[in-house]
Every structure is written in C-alpha cells, then in structure tokens.
Image 1 (cartoon, rainbow, N blue to C red):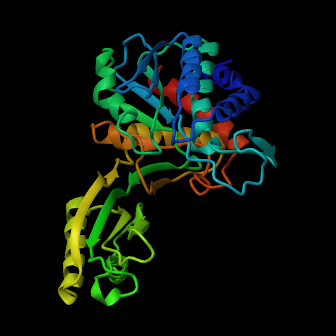
Image 2 (cartoon, one colour):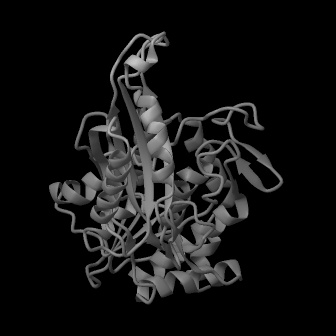
Image 3 (cartoon, rainbow, N blue to C red):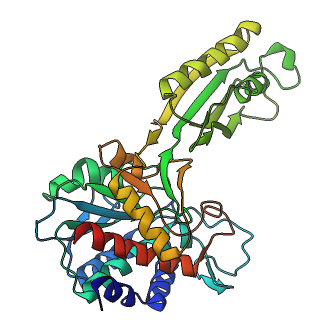
Length: 395
C-alpha cells in the first residue's frame, strides 16, 4: 500500500463526525466569545499528535491555539491550515431542538457552527492525525491554528498571530494558507473589499407637538438614504457586484421630541479595482450633493470604522493548481476558482504577502442562518483533501 492509500485509509469518518459534534457543543457564540473550553480542547488535541503547541494571546481571553509539525528542513514550505473557534449567535426558528446539540438528517449534520466553521477545524485535525498514523515524514513545516474573533473582525485573532504572534515564539511565516471557511470545496481566490461606515446627521430639537419649530434628523436621513442606495455598482468576474447594506439606524431620544440626531451604519462591499478611498470620496460627494439641495441636512459625523481592500490571489500558482487537482481527484467532479464576499482571516495572510485560499466544506449560503448544516460526505472529503495536500506539498 502506498503512502497516499495509507493516509486515506487512516481517516475515520465517525471520529471526524464525533469531533465536529463535540466542538459544536462547546458554546463559543460571539458575543460574548468564551474560548476557555474550546481552546483547551484544541491544545490537547494538537499536543496529542505530538505537535509543538503554544497559546498565542495578544489580549486576555483571546487564546489562539497553534500547533507545529516540524519537518526535516529539506523544504522551505510552511503550510498553514486554520479555522476560527467562534460562531455567530444561535438565533431562532431552527428545525432542531438545540442548535448546540447537532442532529443528523439525510446525510447532513445540522447545528450552529457545523459549517462556519467547526467542521473544518475537525477535518484539519483529522487530516494531520491521518498523516501521523500513516507514518508520514514531512520535509516542510505544517501549522494548525484554531483562532478567535473572526465573527467580530477582531484584532486578536489571526491578525495578531501573523503580525506578532508567530515571531514571539520564533516561528517563521507560512508560505501558503488554507482557511477552512465553507465554500462547497470551491477555491475562493478573489475577495471583495469591505467598509463599515457610520454617518450621523444633526437636526434641531423641538417639542414633538410643534415639529415645524425643529429639524428632524430622521427625516433628513430618509432623504439621504435613496441616493446612497442609488450609487453606481461595479461588477467583477469573480467577486460579483458591489453591495450596500443599511445595517443599523438610530435617531432621536423620545417620542415627543423632534430628533436632533440620526446615525446610520452601512456595510459596503466593493469589487476590484476600486479602493476604499475612492468609495469614501464618492459617498461623501453623494452626501454633499443631497445637502446642497437641502440646507437643513447637516453632516455631524462620517467615520469609516472598518476598511479592507479587495484582494485577488493568482489562480495559476502551483499551490492552487495542486489543491484543485486533489479536490477533483477526491470528489470525482470538477471544481472552480470563485470569489467571495469577504476574505475573512485570509485577509491577514494575503496582505502580509502570503498566498491564501478560502476553502472548506459546507456552504456559505447557510452560514449565519438557522439552516446551517454540512454534508457529511463533503466534510469527510475535506479531511482527505487536507491530508493529501499536506502529503504532496510537504513530503
């Protein structure tokens, strides 16, 4: 039996499923994001494989767990497989009794976090375990990371690991990153830019029974919103089209008082080759144009509180082609290079000059919804693909 056959035969689907369920049962809803149990488990799992293991913590309560399988040094390649431990809040109206107690139906595992992305975390671990069981000897290094705060775009997750954490333990930067987000095992290499914007308009308070004596900031925001939504949208062949989401709106203090302020927040996703500076300038122009027609529209605050530029990784890289070939071999079906609405944690590796791919089992269409599920066969295939990729890339 060849090494690849040994590795694949060492992958136990039931063990993978049991670990995924165990991870989902650990409550890591963010907020509040309690990682005390999940980080301890991941550290124990990595240590059980004989990996050099550390907690990479830039802030109390934010324990990123890293495991390093040291190669012989005959290759300079360092593979990073990572996933985040946090999940979005459970929400309501699920078809199962408790979304933190996953259920199996018709070949799918259903529950909060099964796809985004505890299934992938489990598959990454099982892949490494399969190589260990098969007796593989790596020439390059393999990093496994379980990280924090992806769902809140926090600064102490993979951003900290890449920016400061690796260096603090003398670990070299990876040369390739597979981020196990749910992509139906399609290779996502193009990522929209993202801006989170806060706009506050000032009004003038007055008695609610005499509104003409004041200036209602809520009414003025309502005049502005249609022009924001009418902004020109660009299209990219992989990234898709620009999107604008009105996230929150808050105005006024009491029912019987004319609102003297109104604040709107926007999630603006935009495609290359635009930049955030260009989007900001255009949005400011829209506000100025509306204000020019209504002198009572007063901009009190304009803040971009999250800013990420669009990213695109070369599809022709040997590492990308290898992952594509292995995917097609394991699944028996063609796969494609795609784009996605956000680079997530891959943003921190890509902007550090490290090629990365957004790739894993599960579908983005059910992530963050009360329909979150993962196909068990696809989950198993992911473990096989991760294992074969590490074997071919590092041995």
